[in-house]
Image (cartoon, rainbow over all chains, first blue to last red):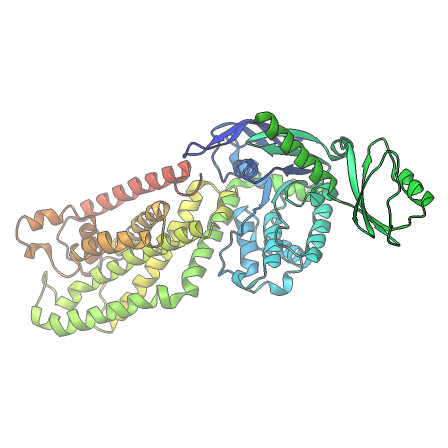
Length: 308
Length: 271
């Protein structure tokens, strides 16, 4: 069953700017789905329409089979959204923000209180429940937006850049939490500019650019399309001269750091064997660029060149 | 999420009216908490202003003016001052609360939820009515220090009080929808509401006015409400009661319909 079904969705704003052109998108129930795209690609417009914050020009949106036009209440009841920008009443205490949202979704007050305690404890905000919003740090506000989005137990959660501006520790805790709710059956749609986040969390993705879906695939298949990967190697001892390694493209960064391009036909084992034969020992390696990031940039660039 | 929890989320739609009731109560609670928390800005100013009116117009000047409409002047101005406070506060509460929710974008909390437009409108209007009536009661208490409290007809008094508060809460809502800055929410109260209220017979009977001003006063809807309220408290009015209710209800229906159409079209809140 589709958690989200978008058909020929278009949006032209009052100023004449067309943000979406005939977008079709299906997200299966239970999926962890990444919606990627450069700034201004149409992601926020798409999410805005799905969450009833932006009016569509044409097309259809269904959430778990509920059409947004014909059954708006049932459709909205199934969604929780974590917006990109903070949208709080800054003078309300944390607990009231969550309880009010529960009330808007028809959750009785007593039930809302127990749910709020559970969520705020999980997101490490319970001790701050009486603190006014304006006194929270950016990371706390981000986590509170997640608690607010989940208080009515939606079946589909849309996270629009949930970890923007969040430190690494909190980001990893938030990833863990997202994996947990997805494992419990909640469908998640994530937009992010941290592509390692999408690669690490999501199973499927769509790339949107210039108001159109440019690619839709599962992440494993998409990563399989990478022709070459570039690795940065840290050497145990400085290499005075680089030996020729047939099939590999080597480029020294400095005496102890090496950049190597490995094609899809080659293996890392082969690279290490070749380096060992020349007495070069490697202490660590990393991807020069996140794999999904490279694919994403390649796609966007290729299409822009084609358009030009 | 567990299966029962999912079912619970879906089953919410089965009990629609209960869900509407919870959403409405949440909105009203939010609004009442808001104006109660900042009572120094929301409740106290009207108490101080009306105290000054009673001291200056009621006691100091009023004693020299003599009777008005067959009543002592201070008694005559009590209903108008109460209703003026109700009008201003019902209007201000909705215009500032709804505009703030637009400005800080937490209106999105409501827009993404399954709350129908009429519940959103009813919630904000009820918040405005709650503040208007609260301040009205405070002003009546203040008035009791200066003159003997009189109540001619309880049902007329309560009905016109509530209808007036509803009408101006709706006005505040429409103002907030169109407002693009905090300046925009003070224009109507300053340039429309205040003149209409002062010229609506708070301080005088329209019998005192020469023509054409007496006839022109009849196009001012606030005149009808103040007179109906004065009838409720004191038993005197310049205009027939039925017309006052008819006009007030007609305005409520018109503004209510217009407010809902604004919400349906997403004017000022959806792109």
